[in-house]
Image 1 (cartoon, rainbow, N blue to C red):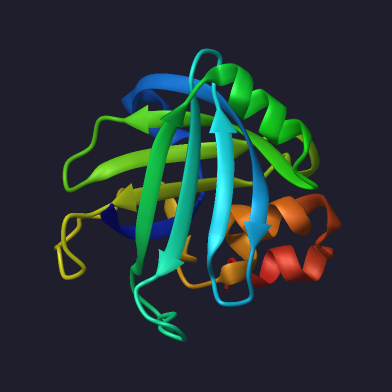
Image 2 (cartoon, helix red, strand yellow; image 1 turned 135 degrees about the vertical axis):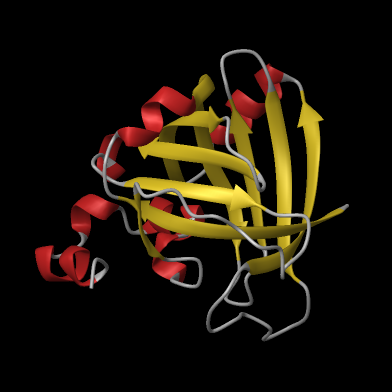
Length: 172
């Protein structure tokens, strides 16, 4: 079990691309998702699978702003099992994940595909909630606490189904 501390941002430009150290295509689906923020996710890349449960630190403890803090239980599972589970998930998404070489935390940029094509989000996992962080200039607004942009929410209500006004309002 780990405590996940994460901040999420929209991405303004492609200036992050020269900082990519590795990339992987991820397919993921949601076995279950509750109104209380508990999700069970299955994910795989081209050769590994994972089963992940995420849960809030305490019931009703979703922050209004700042980093997302939650428990994360992640387990490696056989690729065949991950693919079989994914086929049974009603809500799925896929994305290209780019791991970056940046200081201050573990940075990734997710370029979504399929019904979420066009959405690009950056995430940084931190060791502490109060960790100081130098934000790269290619980042857009922070969206950490916008639940509509969680992967579980995007699997249920993809970016392509958002109204143009909803998409544009995120940049303000």
